[in-house]
Image (cartoon, rainbow, N blue to C red; front, side, top):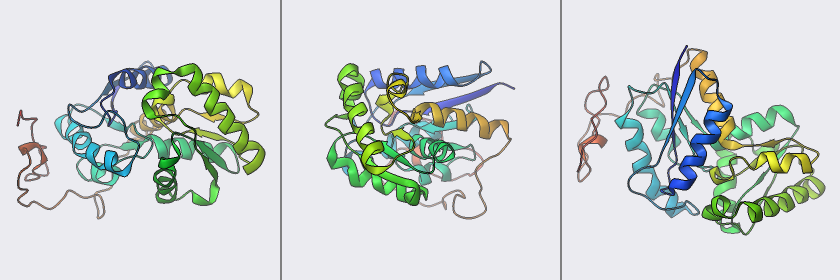
Length: 256
């Protein structure tokens, strides 16, 4: 069984997108291909609600443009931006790296902590923990001084900051597993885990493996109610790709 997954980095930092593709392909099987992409328009990084909301249209455009070509999609930002809307516009599985990493961590320890970026993102991260339904299993969210871009461009410093945050989570919060709370941290689990007494979850790897697994199970997104296709209506000022007129045929990408 061959599987094609599209991993969408909602920000526009291409170095991070390349790393997302490398990590996802490393952990999925040889019969699975993961193509990593970024939207043409959007913020260079996502560190606030404003960034998050700006990134969602480009993310959904990437799904609409290739809805028939891929078997599943990975939402490769730890806030899982717009993931419910993404699930409405395709029957294919859509897996967020936040929920993916938390689901895996929840199977490996009685609780987990998230080691993540700037302190201003704490509420943003905690909200995703709540909406995923795992607030009771989350021991803490431990922030660093890292920006999203720095997780990709200053790897040694990023590893050091995350190691410190993880140790604090384990020693002070009782964390039994660590989720790396940014797509730019992909691959750093291999550096951190030998230094810690608990499993460290690479969020991109977790989401890619889960997306592959859901496809192998032959499952698709439920369309009975919440995630059914949006009702057909006029949408003013947006390109044709955002129009939902025929549920059976997603709109083609346009140059508008």
